[in-house]
Length: 69
Image 1 (cartoon, rainbow, N blue to C red):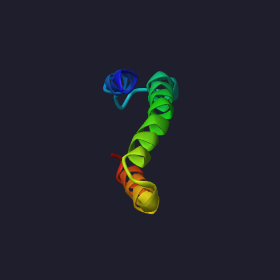
Image 2: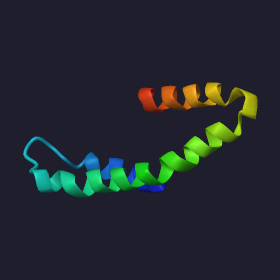
Image 3: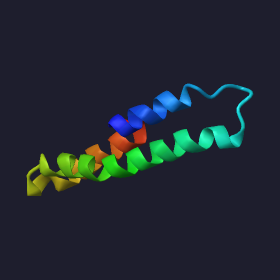
């Protein structure tokens, strides 16, 4: 999450005169942070449901991903 925060802070430095290379570091940082956080978040969601309700857990996980939570 701290890496993602750093990526967002870097992204706030981009303005209308920025080039593609100015976007490169913030976007790579955000991509790295999202890649590191999605799997543990999915595991946390799925572990909170009993085995009989894993379909509900998958639906909750997909909804969270769709909403960008």
